[in-house]
Length: 293
Image 1 (tube, rainbow, N blue to C red):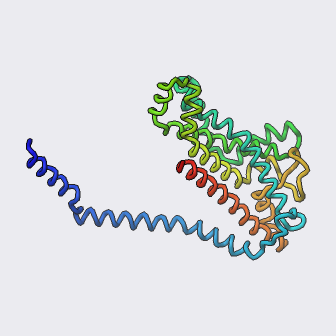
Image 2 (image 1 turned 30 degrees about the vertical axis):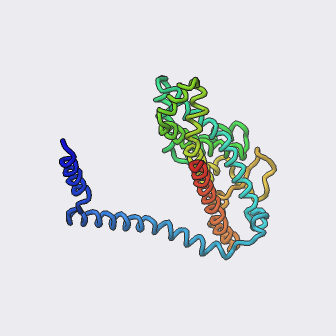
Image 3 (image 1 turned 180 degrees about the vertical axis):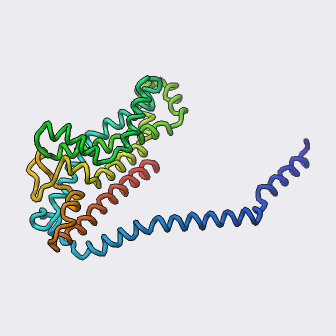
């Protein structure tokens, strides 16, 4: 085949590649784009309406002293601290265990007979209603210790966070190219060194995002805390006592006839939404910073 024939073939391929789509295909494309945009806007209507209602009712009632006062003094400072305590306990219990379990499923236990069982149980846990998790934590922690506490609430939230972290970690490790593992082995790295110095290091952005999203989800849970941490109108004196939290504060005071407490519900909702939003923004920033290196 001479150069003139190759040139003719290339020109023919170029004409085929850049030839405009038929009008029927273009119409179908535009129609699908408009339909997708319309359905997206339709799905955003409930979200925007809820956000508008919360902001309209809550912004006017926000005062600086609310962040340092307890519920007794018409503030939510104790609920913010309590939420931080409970979520921190849940993260300490679930993040290390979830990451190690995900590493086992993706790297070390591929041929282990227990892998399919662990993965199956983990996927089931992702669909368990949060109130059932609360009853489980109540029977396991509260009944044994004979008291509601932040530790019991943290255990309930850890149960909710754990499957999310496990599955996110497993999928993140699977996305790491096999070539990186082979390169590490070629340089003399053993299985342990390859996994923890190469594979996990490459998957850190996705693992971090999954962990932070699990934390954001747990921070907004109400039902598990009703059975475990319960509530406290004043500052909690320790981790083994009933502890206030933002979601339970909203739940308890929503139907209160006191107008001042009812206004407190809407301002607390803004604070809770802001905390969840901040966690999501941090997860994005951590991922972007890691990818830019």
